[in-house]
Length: 234
Ligand code: PGA
Image 1 (cartoon, rainbow, N blue to C red):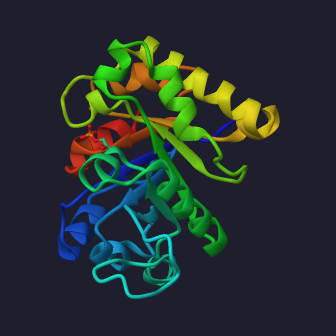
Image 2 (spheres, protein in one colour; image 1 turned 45 degrees about the vertical axis):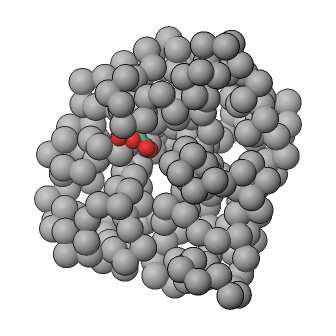
């Protein structure tokens, strides 16, 4: 049985003081793990709370002359235990390639951080029938290790358009089949695959009911403790 994991990706929102205020209002759910990826400067503010704390990105090198970047060791020291890698905003707005994201995954693993590895097709790719090829390309060469995968169709992120539960299940099943080919069935079966993209308290229950959807990666609906709590209660 895979555990349910509900992850808040706060993106460039919330100061450390706002993060503390948020966590004071949140109750731990009975049957799910809660993970939060705040800004780097708010990681230590959530340390010691009931949530698992992570970062939204990191550099692939351990250290060096990379002005403005942050290393795995730095975010670990701040209190993070996981790191989101390959988010579509990093791929699209910051030009991160599959090869670079894989280097980040290797660095995270060798540093003791759990990667939350994001994949997903654009609207155009879906319309052209390329979804499977895109997911296969993004998963290619991913090392067999303990990590969490998030399937986030790019057209659903921050747009209010969600994949239907059936569309999401189909993509998740495909991801699991690809992982099974790469890693063997046992590891594929125990790897949590989360859905992300305009998850709300209204659509979350039907998505989370799907057999291959093990949780959610939530942006907009995780910014208010009330709305996030509604999803945690499901
Ligand atoms: P959203 O963001 O829930 O606001 O669509 C999800 C994400 O980017 O991880």
